[in-house]
Length: 311
Image 1: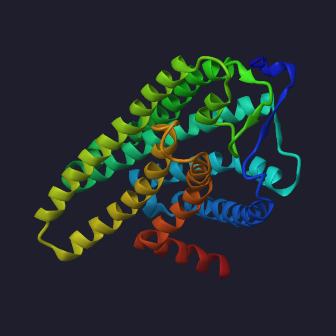
Image 2: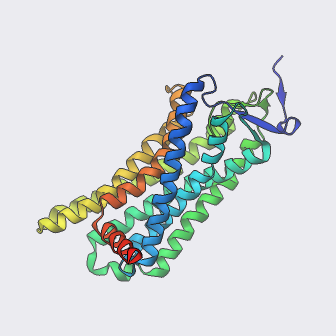
Image 3: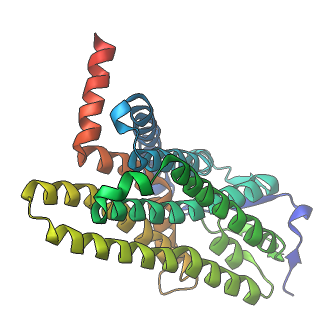
């Protein structure tokens, strides 16, 4: 007989991860700990530089500092729990903890998708309409766009998560993943998940396909504008700034789409776990490095702040 339980009857889930490969888990623990520490240091550095350096008080760095704050919150919502589960044999998470993680994980993930679009549009305006950039991207509009990103992500989470939590989960409550996220929770259900899968597909199209399309349109306009620039130095600067953003977008979208657009795909569940690890742990670590190593203004500001501290 197919046994289906209400989650409140047991009160917890088991996050399986790679529990069948303890040696791999030991390696992943130390790697994730290092990446998490680098994420904290790197993103806090970008936030401080953007706040303390007057020359970086521009829309681009306002959005970038919000992006860094988002990455800090995103990793903190899941990595500490991952580390606890990887360290010892106990791999459980309470129902309340899983519910909170579901809400926060989807909220911040959806916000990141929208924020990446805003950052692409900002670069498009800066390069395609440089003379009108200041008047278009004024502080009030920038604040409104950031509120829109965070608010839209929260609304998406509030709409989607309740239906996921009301699924009839199988008696074992073993989530075959490192975190409580929607595709993994749908797979855990022993009931009819048609509605949830349709809901996930629609939200994935809205939050992944539509934003990615807008980003590609923005960068199409940027590419066209760059080709018209006669100055080689101007072209290199524009390509350097936009290249960093495109690299961040590629890292995020390539892994997230593999998990959310095709929850029952040709990828094995083990591969999906690695994709989850990549966009939840690795990408937030690489983003500060990408923006600082490829951005002269940030490197100059960082050197000046370090000199001031040393003096």
